[in-house]
Length: 387
Image 1 (tube, rainbow, N blue to C red):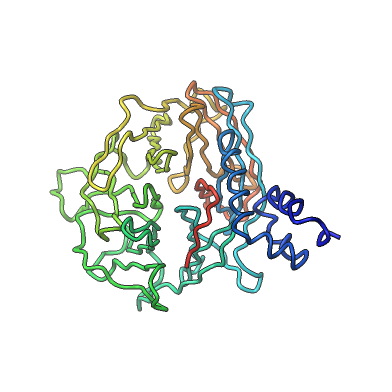
Image 2 (tube, helix red, strand yellow):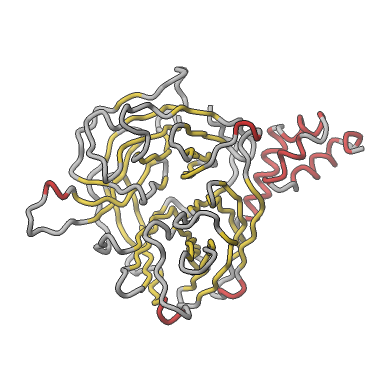
């Protein structure tokens, strides 16, 4: 029986168990359940994952209101040798307490998942954490039309969640609320004293966490402009330490509603921005060399600039609501998730794109929910607990 194995052998076996199988392993026997939660084994498992991350990396992908873990192997400048393998479905709690997930965010090994009906949130560590369930603060008119992000206070390293209204809902002074996961209060949502800014963020533009801060693509508030002026787009940052927004930060492009734009964190505390104008289908990805709440500096050269007219057999634009992506700076490769809603039935797709313009298309399977493209975020296991 597995319970009769020596401790050192049991630990070696458990350290090789994939993240998505740990839940089943813990139900095998009481001894393995206890061992799988030990700090020694956790550190051994994380060390093994860190070694693997040098060759490949893991991503968390929300598809069809469920969350999956995938492992990506990228070959240097050889797109056709790259691979994407689904590891399994991530389950945060017993079936009786599962939720349909409409949005997912990552910070420090913690995942923030938003329920489809927008009434509940769950923060959890897929590797070793007990899920923390949070009721969304009630607003009489609707739960919908809100954006979320997760980051941490650098002075205390306490993780926090920010919520505010999206582009189509007129913000008022009490529409900025924050939840402190380190608070002892049972319900620590509190309003922030933030004057409504002169910009808007659309719901389709999810925030990403870099160095504990959250960043979004934003657009100037049209009510603040003269009729002859065009809306300008830029980056905006929320500093979780000071609990305030920084100034408008410049982008290397100007985008319009029909263009595809997306943000992604990059290893080393950088930020990448993807831009695909609707009329040319050219894809550009820019990377920062420095990023702070009040300052941004871009690399002198664009990381990737290719035309999908030449690379894909048909004219293809990533969905305006899609285009979540990752890059590997060393291997000069980008991975973009999207949905092909033109074919029947619709399918979730991943595109592996080399800086030389080569493209490999990976079919992730049929989707039961048209116009709900995959939403992906990179993931590296940690020992951080949500509470």
